[in-house]
Image (cartoon, rainbow, N blue to C red; front, side):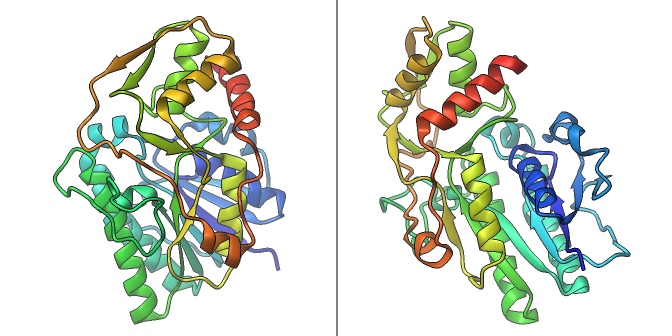
Length: 311
């Protein structure tokens, strides 16, 4: 019989790409989203699909499903600094109550849950690159704490349900991901730089630009998430691109690919901004036979083309 997947936050950037992926593999897809940060246009093209259903609902509140759910992907959460600084309570609630609700649905349907965790559980890391065994360096009351601790708690309750109730669970620690459908004003480096470059406005680099990030194209990430969901790994798995670069070099890359006349300017570094970020993906490569395949230039060209059409 056809499998049915529930995606919380399915109108968001990554969630909507997951919906596309599962529909392409002939799953029934149910998206639950309250559109706090998700966008209706991300799933507009799916509304006529007979295998797709949209439920406008806040996943921190109970919801029941009459038909069997096979897989649940919990992706509901504000994810950018602008969003979770503006929505701190909602961010904490969806990490705690939202995960609790999703685990309850998982138990009721004897389903399998994949939790979207994040590299932010590592905080401002003292270990580099970051393996899954690293516990992190997080300031629980700092400006990023509401997101970091929401995801750390979500991991903890997910593992607790797995151990106590024998619930099938998977945990993905997602590193910086970019691609089509990112929100222009979400405050993250990729849309910021692309927008500024396309408009020939100054590109704002924080600090000296020597902090590092690793960027994974969304289609690569979706393949990794799908492989993890169907695997037998019940411990956290890093998913991201291990190719590390400085933010300054990234700004120069965006300038080159957009042929922009923008100049680079420097702004004060935000509090608790991670100095380094690079995933150790040895576990994903060995256990999932997964690693990113799309080059940064190719992924950025696709993303820039999308932004050019949608600005």
